[in-house]
Length: 150
Image (tube, rainbow, N blue to C red):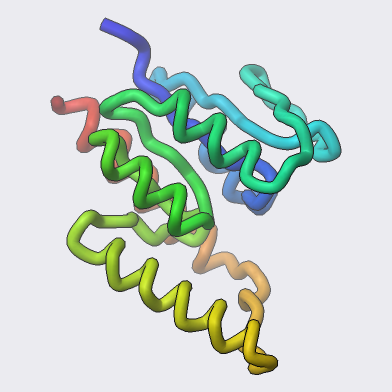
């Protein structure tokens, strides 16, 4: 059996979430693989560098994902692809992406994008909090132990 893996879209992953994921993977025997474009420097035992093209990291993660993997990403489109590969997806804020909700999330993202293209303004992400770190820890821990029982 292959070692279970967590794949992280490290271009957009807050440092705290990255540190939490690396510690949890280490403690639970999971391989933690980070992906980032070459203009992002980060410390990781298993790091894959891609070019700086838009979507390059997302495409590499989507291609590398296997059934049972856990992917950490803020990108809803990538999360939808991951769920389609019988893998799990989680945001750095601790939201577990679920197949029954992903379509709504994609629609909401498209609506906001259309609104911004029309000149509207939407709120950016809120500053990261200790609650975000706690929620991310709990969600990732839940997915790691859930998958360990399969």
